[in-house]
Length: 323
Image 1: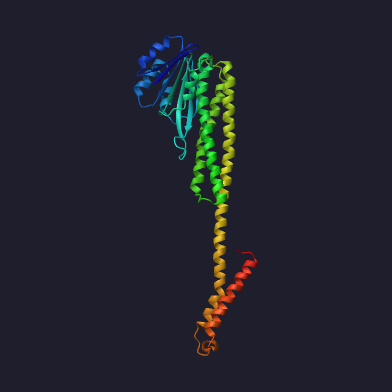
Image 2: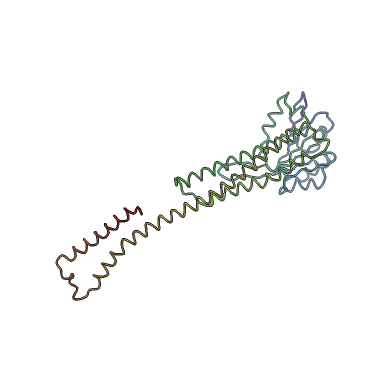
């Protein structure tokens, strides 16, 4: 755990080992941000819930990482569940992680599943003594956490768009053998982002409608800005979903075209050998009184016939532009 104590003229960072070390900060006039990584320590979570009067059902929601993004109001605090999506390795698909945010009058608590952190820009902003982070309320701080999460949606979407465009170029130019599972993997990524973005829009909509005294009116423009970002992401996701459908059609058309080319080549070869097979079959009957069998130039005549018919058919196919 790490705890940032901050105000207009103060910024202190504390490394917290247990819940008892948090108690003194509840009595100070400054605001503080408690960031917790990991959900393995049930005893610690229970102590923190008792310290901040967190409802037992809210604690269960924090532990249950399959929650949908949501917004819940209580008398003493507001609880927000968000989904953070990020890439540890761009070669692989995105990772989804739940982030629980709880804020009251003078505190903000963020609880993450894993140590991977996207909140470094917020720590940097806290260092600015004249910035809004220190001057405005905890609702603004919670907004900045959500804004950082939504910004990661843009990064994941941009990565997916780049891969979709690369696959499209590969299919058109045939520079690399593209496999259908690679296309469906990008569709899965788009669906994964969409599955978390849609509830986030509902979360922000509920925030905008909230009448809680913990949410100040001057924070609403910032929430509206995040809401517009989410709408933009949803629109881009719809565009990319259509792009993937078009990509599948392009892949199947390209595959069908290749198969047609192969079949055309095989058909031309088979057609050329039809008269050759006929001629060879006629002279393979070995009747006793076939006049050409005893002819001195019979063998040469047959080869001239073979080559002549082949060249004539190739010339004909060329004029028809069949290959």
